[in-house]
Image (tube, rainbow, N blue to C red; front, top):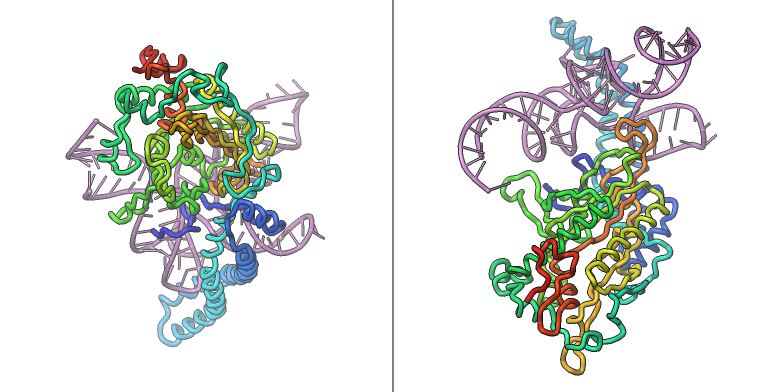
Length: 485
RNA sequence: GGAGAGGUGGCAGAGCGGUUGAAUGCGCCGGUCUCGAAAACCGGUAUGGCCUUUUGGUCAUCGGGGGUUCGAAUCCCCCCCUCUCCGCCA
């Protein structure tokens, strides 16, 4: 199997990708969108290839129509003559053969012309598809234009009662904050050396109560979405086919970020990829389907292990639980009707769920409106949520970190970008329905990614004596334990 | 891992290489009949693309890709998937 981009041809999906008609009608909108996102796409070439392809395709269709017509006309004749040929002898035989050859000559010429056109099309089509696949979703007009995360705009912040984000941890709590690294070490919650021994850099082992806390917060997060907000929990593959990675928009852009299982090298038919988020499988669930409009919106969540190569992260965040190759995450996904207002409302609600979740854990956070440069290819809009991590950030005068916000959540609004690529549509009556079909809209947001969430959890709930208080909502998942250490 | 059987329209189920985008049945929609309903009968009932102002025309699609052929659901190759049996195994 080829590994090249732009080759989602098989399976139940024949990905239409970006709306070609929209692109033809208003290429400027897509050009601007890509520019604002800092993504380079050769639109001139793309549009030129599109024009050429359509000319060739139209011509080929005309020829094929002619061929079909001829075929219908003389098919039966050739068949009849071929039948006679079997019985015929000598002179009569030669005559029939000549007749058949004559009949075949016309279509033969057509075939040659069609083959020539086909060859030409086959030559430029892959490049066209690859280019089309690179076209990002244009950001919504109300998304601030910016180059990088530095240009993101804070929307609001929240902190638990009695904790003032304008003051230092020490001023708030009366003692100097330990970092999560120190807490984890002193309380025996993680073993980095052995993690690295097992899996190499950026691996870790959560030990004892560390593992328990990790599981507790994830289980709580899943129950929170299911019981409080009516999401349907799913367990899904984390090892998926390439078409799912392309369909969800992670490929081609994010190839470097995904672990690639090269099963073809062992004789299998296709390679597989480890997913970096449950979003891939949750979105892929209904790929290629026509959903029943009355079943929308679909609200799914999953607890899945996520794998990220962190290519390009260089030496950033090498220590601790912040940036690692493998973690677990509860993810929420909504698939709704193709309506901007509906889609926007869900975005707000999904962000609200996370705020409620973080508040119940007593974690301080802020919401950031991501700027165009930080959206990635697939999003029309994205809001990041960052938790306050007292042990993070630059060193203060005392040589201790002053604290910083660290990204823990990301809420994406994609319109029909993914659903087009995944060929996921809806209409009244679903598959059996009769009306026109429409591509769904999709959204996703983190609910809880751990162990990263353990950083603010441990750092915010640490006590003067070095112990850590377990938030009340997690205690039922920790066998009633109220305090670690 | 080994052996075999299959994948056709919403479902079931036909389909000697040539008016087969696909019989037939079911389902669904519309109509006739009826006070109304059922039955019966008649008609309609896929998706996507391209051309077209409308109407309409046309191409592609019978798991996916490639090949043979003037012509492929039908023949050949590769892959994916499903089922059965054996082996192995949480």
